[in-house]
Image (cartoon, rainbow, N blue to C red; front, side, top):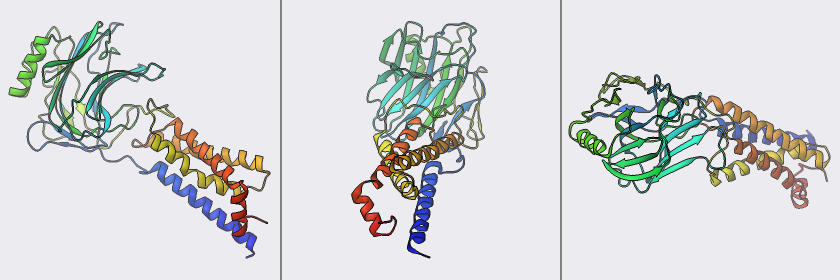
Length: 364
C-alpha cells in the first residue's frame, strides 16, 4: 500500500471513529429507560429518582367556560437535593399552547406559565426564595383566580402576584409529575399528597387544610359544589394512584419513562454554556477529517464539510425525538454546525496543513 493510499485509509478510519463517537454521545441510551418510581416503605407516598414520571389518565377537571376558572392546588413533597433545577409537576394539554409548571430551581420554588411558541416575555414566573433548604418536607398550597395567584408554604402566605391566573390555562388540564411534558427535565424527591380544588381556597381554609394534612394525612374538605381530586398515595403497590374523593382521574405510573408530547428542535429558554461549548468542540475533529478527505477547492471543501456536519447533527436531533432522556434542541444543530465549520477552517490554516503534510495526510 503506497503512502497516499495509507494516509487516505487512516483518514477514513479516523472520520468513521469521529462519527461513531458522536452518534453514541448524541443517542445514548438507545432505549427508553425504566420509570424510576417506587413506593415509600414507611408512610404514604412515592419516591421519584430521575428519570421518573407520573401521568394522569385523563383531565384533572373539565371547565366548559372559555376563561380560566378559580382553582387551588395542594402538594406535599420532599426534594432529594437542593443542587438541581427541574420540573416537579405540570398542568398540560396538547390542545393548548400554554403549559403551567411548578419547578424546583435549586433551593427556590418557581411557578411558571410558558407558551409552546415562546416569545421574549416567556416564561412568566413567580418565585418563592430559599424554600427547599435542608431537604425537609414542605407543604405547598397555590390558589388562583383571574385577579391574583397566591403561594402558601406550610399554611402561611409566602408570595402573591396580581392578575396572574396561573393554574387554569386550559379547560381540561392533565397532570404530568416528575418531569416536563415536552422535554426531559427529571425531578427527584418524594410526593406524599396531592389535591386539586375547583375553587379559590381562602387563607383560613388553607391554614385549616395544612393542619389537617399534618395531623391526619388528609384534609377534611367541604365540597363547594364539586369535589376535589384528592390523592393520598396510600396504595403502597401497583401502578395506579386513585383519587379518594371519587372525583378526578387515576394517576398512573408507566413501566418505562416517557415524555408525553416531546418537542422537535425546541428553542431553550435558558442557555447552558457548558453544553454549547461541548457541542461546538465535539464536532471540530469531524470537520477537520472531512475537510482533509475533500479534494475540492478550499471554499467548496469548507461548504461541503459544513453541510455534512449539519446533516449529521440534524439526523441526531430528529432521532432524539424517540428517546425520552434526550432533548431535541435547535441550538445543538447550530453549535454542531459551527464546530464542523471550525474544524474545516482549522485544517486549512497553514501551520496545520504543514503538520498534516509531515505525517503524510496531505501532499506536499
